[in-house]
Length: 387
Ligand code: CAA
Image (cartoon, rainbow, N blue to C red):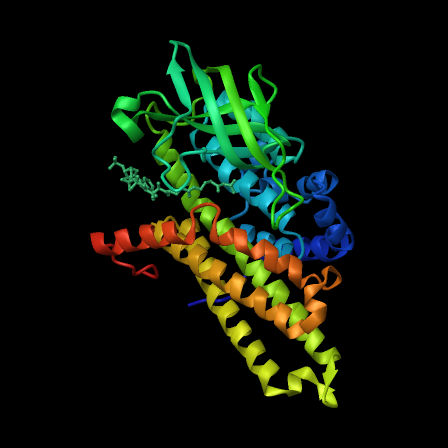
């Protein structure tokens, strides 16, 4: 068993770390306060190859593997989770499926703009009445021969306002429920596409989350992703990969808050010695480090399973569930280690704690991950991923 990273993976890790620590960190508190979208930084992420990390070079992507992708997300997430969710939703939820299931002409048209960071992608699945229950799609895509006529509202869309390309899941034949759902690429510039107000969120405040409305939008059939009626499975497969991205994000928040807590515990003195010389703090650090290590193994392994063509949905769900719980616990403990200073914005840990909560909610709540995992177990899935 090998636990080493390739040169290419190390290179992405270093580039993302350098970018996060030196470029993103200086203004991150202000952007969070003002809920300011990091538009300029997204362009730089494109230049660094982060906005098409797993997309093939043929379309301007970096052509790297999922492990490199998790390393990139992890490093950004130590500092700026608005940037890391923009990267994650764009790569996993938009680019991945367009490249895998789109027609060649569509890919030629959209992918180069997207991999360069010029155009951001978004994934429109959730609706006011279809969150966890994703089969209950009310957005309709009426079959009009050579095109679909799309009507409906999508909620909680990451990159909602800034996206140029929406991957939309919509119902064409309600009588056959999820087997009548289609996935399609809708251009944000088309007539009938509008967005709602930016949500005022607890965390990841700089990322733009909003509703996206479609009114009589004509979508050529050439924009469908995958065969007719494949849309629900398309969404599920997309989320299997997306969950690795969110697991990596949770891992990054946990690791980032731990690193801050460790550094602070050396500097801060109480009762005449650094606080990490007190067992109460030292043991907290030990628990944080142990849980992060376990989460890291699960996240990298899920990525490795995807890269090696293994069935990875179960590993992705487990990694996302575990890492997001570790992120929540660890960021809370990091605030505790900082004491009163942890409760103010200047020390970064309160932001990471606020950001952590969303990883237990989006791309499938913790309850949905437990549902996916337990169903697989009951069905008799043999979890022997190393074979
Ligand atoms: N891959 C491929 N196919 C799958 C699949 C998978 N991982 N999971 C299920 N399917 C298939 C099933 O085999 C079944 O197909 P058949 O009818 O042909 O047998 C079909 O899909 C329906 O499956 P279920 O009967 O299991 O469906 P269900 O209604 O019980 O729901 C669920 C399953 C797992 C709960 C699903 O609804 C789900 O994942 N819900 C959560 C949705 C979610 O994660 N939303 C997040 C929104 S996106 C977001 O947050 C993005 C962002 O902006 C950051």
